[in-house]
Image 1 (spheres, rainbow, N blue to C red):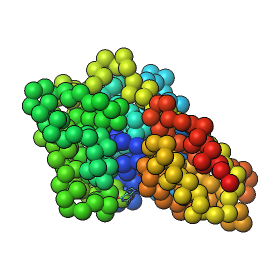
Image 2: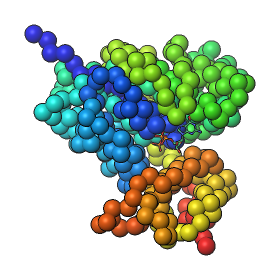
Image 3: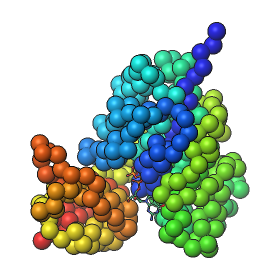
Length: 344
Ligand SMILES: Nc1nc2c(ncn2[C@@H]2O[C@H](COP(=O)(O)OP(=O)(O)OP(=O)(O)O)[C@@H](O)[C@H]2O)c(=O)[nH]1
């Protein structure tokens, strides 16, 4: 008798594209499946896991949301990934669907290969690989500065070479996907949206559906139940790093910046914007204590777009530490960024 495999959806997408927002929506939107979630992110502040635990419910209990913050998932398959999935499957009420949020710098293909692991391949299958993309960033050429060159190269070869590390991570993610979600359509006009679609089509080695979204809000029936069995179809998903001898994330660096408690939220937002504008910070996120406020402030920067909102009260026994995880391309001026963020 064959045992039905548990479907797993891999959610990939560059830093800040909207992966956590999408998963949050999938927890909240009705679809009748019991979920478990595995979150992998850079830095040890664990913002994404915290956000997702904050919206857990009976279909996705808090203890079915597991964070792996010890490094890149695709590099820790045996030590972390396989045991974590096994533990989720061994729950008294096993999940009916597992979502994996990869870090924004992750290469999806090596992770996909891990599903061939003997312990896993009889029990789970990759229902689909979803790439979520920031429509504004794509339209403004953050990943493919020269669309015509990409299209010309694509005609000759299925693996386009990009000059920038950002371009390579983005292309690997799109090339591996069964579905692309073009998120943040609220930030672009029709012309920019059409351009973003063109970039994605040019980057895709095969025709895949592209759906538009705001705040990751997509009908769960489009995202879950694709039935791709992606682990059996690796050849259709070219990668710049087939042999995994080079890591895209070596091209990026992360720092933790501790701040003192602040009084002026707008001033902090202006500093995060300045760090992005003047020093190439790609992503900044973390929790901040604001003097005399009982709530903690969640700060999120994607490039120079910054959002801040109070997310919950500080717990009585919780230390009110203000810390931001900051990610930039290798060699970004970490000292200058820390100075900007910590500056009075
Ligand atoms: N304007 C706008 N902002 C959005 C949208 N979706 C997400 N955001 C914001 O973009 C920021 C990043 O969103 P996340 O969902 O955390 O992105 P992510 O891909 O999980 O980020 P990393 O895990 O750090 O790579 C947050 O401040 C979100 O509130 C959208 O559709 N429009």
